[in-house]
Length: 546
Image 1: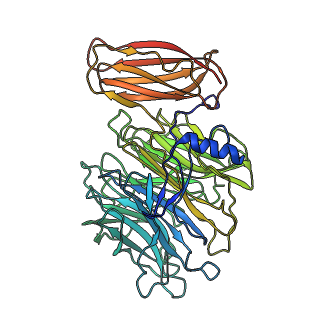
Image 2 (image 1 turned 180 degrees about the horizontal axis):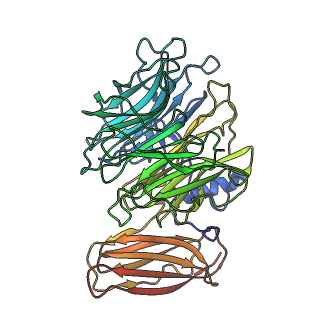
Image 3 (image 1 turned 135 degrees about the vertical axis):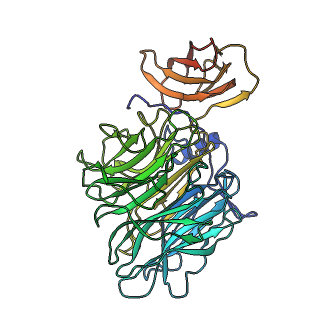
């Protein structure tokens, strides 16, 4: 994977607060940002994203979650655990913000309504969007009794994330230490019997401990009885999603990484599958996603986690092409270096079948953390990694109640890619929630929907170029398309496109910011689906001059 050193990326920039609208801006010109960072001495060659501070508060915030509306992708909501009301004597609340333009700008942050009168705190927020476009935030909520006895509460927004109200108690506390670290998911596969149901999984520390599951119907108003997921009482950090054939998938950490599924709408689960037996996973829990695209990879199941099998923590990827029955013989390492540690991964699959994984990284040094994004256009076989944070940070913890959190997240849908992570660049104890708009990370633009008469690869323009050039090509029918850039020795520099395209005229963008001057070649390979024009290969030459 080290040969994939060049990225096709767009810059989405600026973390300026626009006071007249009280919004956080993430849009500006890449050249201006590059110049500003060069002057400050903080610019590095592959700086392609600038970051926005979502939480905007000097007290700690951590454990962020984000969701793009599956009805209108312009609406996005992010939430996090928020200590702005106090962290030395901790007051846990849930902060959130929303965007109405696909993550380009964000509203000023606010707190969820107060918990129930007999609850003293909120924690562990997770967000979903349902088939009506409503957003939901789940939260653990602690009662002031011996052993905590946490409940799981569900808040709902019917106005695209502007305001939330307490909607339901998804899981009542079972006694003892109660319920901990939930994850929620809404099934949006119309053919599934659980369509528009909300799933919740969590760890119970009550009288019957273990990984548990419940299902919410009627827009999360009514909830099923609690069901055991795991075969034993151990485990934490469960994560849940639906399949494309009515399955419900759950992964969690327990003596390695475990996987289980339900084939009857969550009434019962099967026998645990040991996805990984490496027990040294630290606090890095697994994350699961399913492919809902209309590509041949539809229905594939993806899991990421971090473990210390090689002397340091790495992010690993697993894939099943048959609903979790079989998996790759060996997991694929996502991160492109083996230096220091990579951890806290999360993964999502977009509507084109592309995979995006976020993780934290200490390759620069143990005390210099950065967020990274990795993407794959070939179903997870290969990953291209890119530093995401435009400033390094540390992870000091104010106290054992606040900590740094246990997870970060990314969401990808309809061409939009929105990550969120915990970041302490402003200094201890100022943990904040940062984001960057990565929409267009894997980019091919439709120039015309008019159907061309034949396949054709046009010359890139400009040529020579520095550092960006554009390449147009024609696709006369539905085709599997691969667009690759090579160096003069024939080594792959970047795979710009690897997926199915409808008939039309397209343009892709190649950025040579991270490589040296020289001659490079681009190759278009297309396999048509519908007629005799079913195979096409063409190559062009371009010159990068710096």
